[in-house]
Image (cartoon, rainbow, N blue to C red; front, side, top):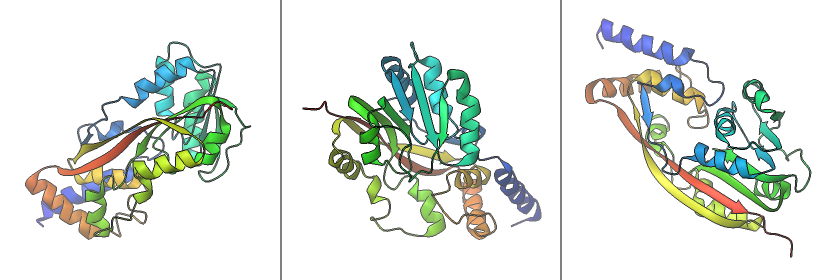
Length: 263
């Protein structure tokens, strides 16, 4: 690689490594990466659900960006809104962002029981939970209450993941398949109202975007560091420079379930 190109590559690596990763604000990617959005418009649809609910809980809220958007567009905000988040930097960011809405953010590890009473909420929501804990979701929903969420599906962005980790078997992320999650929800006593899946195009326009993405979405390549994967980053950088954007595909599904009324 010529010296000037090496300098360009190293500058892009440094830029991608320097961007803060707190929260779920992806505005930094503008002009550097694009992702097709699901047709159902989750955040806008959530705003409509919030307007119809009395008490709501947003699980694994990240930096609170999606809930903030939805609350800001709800025609009538819920009387009570709570959110949980497991990563302390995100919890702090969500608290600052959601406090003006009167939303309390509770710091709860992702795999811990929810610190709320049975039947406390009419609506439980989540955008991209790491793992939906169906028994806890069902427990905190009131009879007739709704779980409304957008989930990450199986093998999402695996074209990129396999560039760094090599070929992965079909069993990897199989628990994210809609049919698997349907079974989990039904086992917890929930009734499926709507379940839709889509495969969506992603383009990475430079290697800085790849670096920032893998630092931000840490479960994609769990041991990722620029130093550990510099050779593969260099090869991918050269491909992007020669052929144009690196294309991958995300998988998403809209999930709506209802807790039956007691018989």
